[in-house]
Image (cartoon, rainbow, N blue to C red; front, side):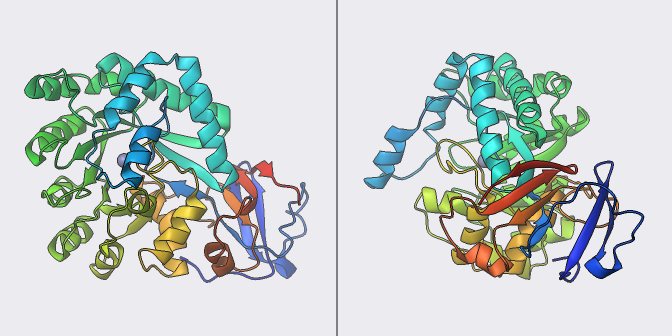
Length: 381
Ligand SMILES: [Zn+2]
């Protein structure tokens, strides 16, 4: 991690921020006067920052899931199934479902979550999803930042150029509905590099930060676009090459990998995480929680798969899941536990972080999650 791990350590929280950290024996007597959470010798980490999710949806993609198990390849086509179900759901139904997912994330140690729209695909329905994401975050008690992903796919019944124009036209409304970011699914079968460039340049002018789904299904040049535009992050990157990786690193674009997706879509692991780290890029690990290609709220599973399928070390994976995620969201107040940071932390159900990563399928990987100094969930033994 960023600083060497402390053992026999203590941490003092005041007003939702870290006020002091150090060895237990040096605890300043005057400061340690509030209620205490005893980690009982377990590892304490900064709360996980899940910087890429599509956590607001309705319906099921079970038909697509079973078809894929029978050998059908993933091409992004199932998104339309979720769009139909999501449009048909009420705001309350969507908020209830999204809040349940965010609570599951929190129980597994996530304290900050990026949530994208993208299953509405009209300006009104996309803005509704942005409102739902923010409301679900409040209900669940986790930090949520929202992203406008009107450019997820071109709806079947729409003219392509008209739809791109509509996405651009809706950017100020998305901003008014609380979006901090604009993202584009730039890939084969989705939006071209030229379309993504137009949308993202307009998004920047509208005051939104930029993110990009890049190089997931094919090598399209999307990573280079992310570097050229200085996006906060480029995500997926299965097909990134060494020159792309160097361009992302040089431009300070955080490279976000989503190992659950490769598993879920049964696509081959391509070694992109190591390629990106070798090029000097900052790596983030995220769940990509979504109904079609990563029905998974668990950052612990993403971290384990980052090690087991992408070849990351335990330290690299945990750093990517905390500091890396924070960097992808351009935040310095989360993802670390230095003095002044948000008191967002997680008590692992493990005496060593390698045990946390190496133990798969654990029902309760985390003993407690703390958000802003508030103990959000203590799991009794
Ligand atoms: Zn995604």
